[in-house]
Length: 343
Image (cartoon, rainbow, N blue to C red; front, side, top):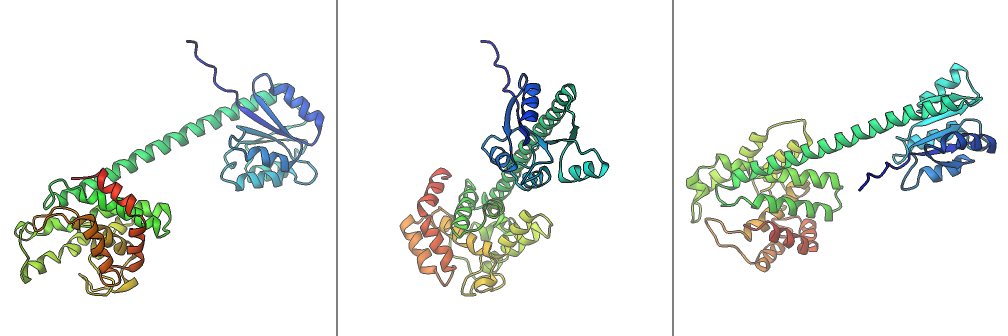
């Protein structure tokens, strides 16, 4: 089967003079798909479509919205700011050229129009634009790969701690997705909820510092053992340390505060109410629900109904009421996570 030719690049010609439009169409039409606009307002409509043009040839001197104002608006819009703009103009002073370059145009084609010059400039700047788009796509792909790798490493670090009292370590996967769901229900911005998804798996990293005789004890802890167990938030905070990375800052905050309680009876600092960082309040609910519904050395798994009832009883005491409400509102999604990442 013969290979299909690549689609033609689209050039938008903006000029209020029909003769100039006809001339540029004649020069460009054999090699490109040409769209035209006789005003700045019409040019904005065309450029704002789902498939914007690959390049704009723009006259400066137009009634109403001139070329300078049009390029200002194009560069202010994220949808159109990357489109290369070439000015077609009789204005040749260095001051005029500098003004255009300052506004973001990539080149000038002066009148009277020369067909070879137009074709050469368009070809050159389209090639540069294609290279830039390919580079941007490559950077996006590489960034996505790095983010996926980072999340995988974080989850594995969290699971390393969980393996000590949970055979599969899937608890950190479930509770991190649950934390993200709750955060979104509470109205947190998606990027912040995504950071929580990546930070929360490290909430119990401090368990690494808890002796097996305490962590794996099948019965109730005595006072001395409980004091040792209560050290794991501070141990985790110490492991994660102070860092400029928003992700690691959030992870350290969650590690330190996910056992604080809304009524001030939690540990290690006895924080109360909104003095507890929001992410710690969210993770507290996600962590307890999944811990209750999981098998641990000291207990069998609770039913979902029993765990939900326990969260409801803890609302206003152990947990912030709004977080519990958000959890309940998204319970079907949370149960889907539980099913997808079962032990």
